[in-house]
Amino acid sequence: MGCNLAIAGVTGAVGQEFLDILEQRDFPFDSLKVLASSRSVGKKVEFKGKEYTVEELTKNSFSGIDIALFSAGGARSKEFAPAAVEAGAVVVDNSSAFRMDPEVPLVIPEINPEKIKDNKGIIANPNCSTIIGIVPVWPLHKANPVKRMIVSTYQAASGAGQSAMFELRDQSREILDGKEPTCNAFPYQIAFNIFSHNSAIGPNGYNEEEMKMVKETQKIFDCPDIAITCTCVRIPVMRAHCESINLEFTEPITADQVRDLLSTAPGVSVMDDRKNNRFPMPIDATGKDDILVGRIRQDESVPDNRGINIWVAGDQLRKGAALNAVQIAEKLL
Image (cartoon, rainbow, N blue to C red; front, side, top):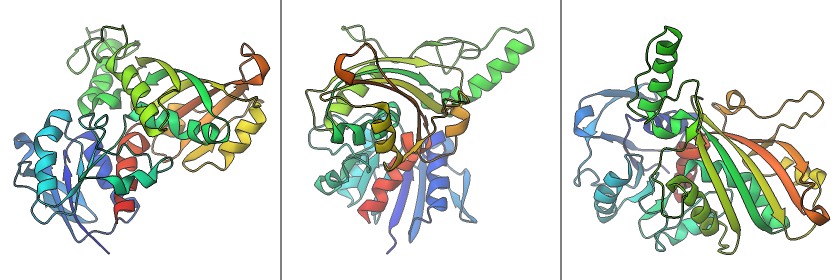
């Protein structure tokens, strides 16, 4: 059974990834409407060998649409998603607009697919670093509840959109040519540099990205008591995020048990070659659907073998964004 599908924000990095993933997964659809802001109207996008013309995203864009995939930013989601719902569509929204709304399911299909049916017209896609971090943590948490998580992220330029990816490329050229780097998408030089994640700092000293990971994980795991602290950083990598994750469990657990649990976990691939010091890298994760996990080892600073360190890499544009939304759409069908 097909559906009438709309993509809002089709010209952005995630919008383009939607098209690739829908085609690769042979998503069943009867019609496709591609939407973006007024400045992209008239542009052509190709999908499955056919050309589609970009239309302006308005409140009247959703007549007859069954599923609308949104990646147009939080402000546009707040403005246009309710109109899509009113027209009869189910919105899968990739922005932060609705994630913490208690009425809106926040879904990772490998973790809480049962929440999809609770939707009142909108389903929220979690933050990219949340998805990449907790897909591999969930099977461990199910087997042995996690009491505390300490996460440090190494986030690619893609998390800030297409313009940020171009900026990384252009700045690299400028610096290698002996020129001053041009900063537009980011507040600081991203090429050959690392800086604290460029989201607003709250009164507690944590930035928005860090607090998203804390609150979203607690909501998705349905576990408000899990203690989480994060440090989120931007690195000069094009499109895959990495994370160092330290876990403290309720009961003792060994690195071998973790490896065994992750070897059969959906959406996860173990890449843990100690002999050759070969572990997940952004270049390994780019273009892949699975979250890659390695550096699986006991945290010897935690008593009773209750501590574990892991290192993960995941494609921010795929599982961190577009793929997760498409998997939700597949379950809606």
